[in-house]
Image (cartoon, rainbow, N blue to C red; front, side):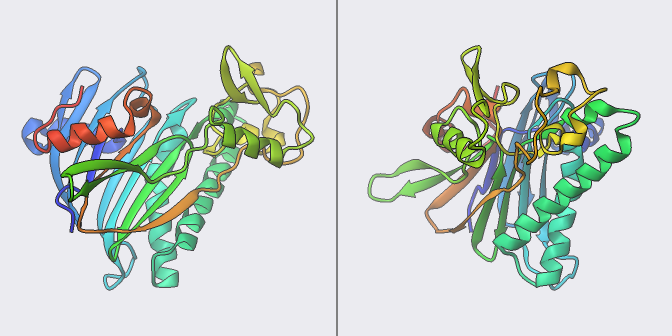
Amino acid sequence: MLSRLVNFLKACWWPSLDRYAHKGSDASGWQDGLLWYKDNGQHFNGEFSMAVVQANNLLEDQSQIESGSLSTLESGPYGTFVGIYDGHGGPETSRYINDHLFQHLKRFTTEQQSMSVDVIKKAYQATEDGFFSLVTKQWPMNPQIAAVGSCCLVGVVCNGTLYIANVGDSRAVLGRLVKATGEVLAIQLSSEHNVAIESVRQEMHSLHPDDSHIVVLKHNVWRVKGLIQISRSIGDVYLKKAEFNREPLYQKFRLRQPFRMPILSSEPSVSMHELQPHDQFLIFASDGLWEHLSNQVAVDIVQNHPRNVRYT
């Protein structure tokens, strides 16, 4: 299908990071300070490579790639699942997504006997609901978990169709060959939910017409309620359920006025793309990459260094 389907330029893999590190470099993973990378691996639809650049002392991000049956039935649809979970406020949400989202996807695929946009949305909602339950349970001992959240970018390749789902500001980019010129062009496949984007700010204002401060310019950065840049996420319960926006949550997260409807959403933007022979590869990455590289520059790097690349 595709010779190099999945390339991660900035992704994080939590428990597998430790597993590969203990096996040593010949087991497919290397560590160098805050960098961990894997040159080539196999999945159902081709090959993948990945790299981790840890920005903080505590790794808040996760990623996973799963191949084979996307259903709990061996006869179910086969394909590849990719997940990029860019956490903030702590590691709990991204780890929860890493442990549960793919399992929910398999369950709903089994129920409907096919992959679909509806299946993916149900898997996101089940993951969100499950994390809400975890926050409710842990609130008396660890109220700050209400302020932990994660972006969630997912790619599913099944029967020649690529599904892209996203909440937050991670991004999926396709490298497509233009036969007439030999160029490989960058095509952005995901929709981002960051209020730095004017259309996202307009969406927030339309959803909250009675709140003139739903988006605030603070220190030259647009933020929802002056707190967070993304308008959609998994977790961040303190901005979705008013009962968690109170003491003993840290004061910096508490709003002065109670809210009646969720401020942030967990509804993913989902799109479908029929894969073509001239589609060369995909890049899934968090904003940690896209803040420094344009879509085309990232695609050029992958295209010009297809094997044994060390991204630093």
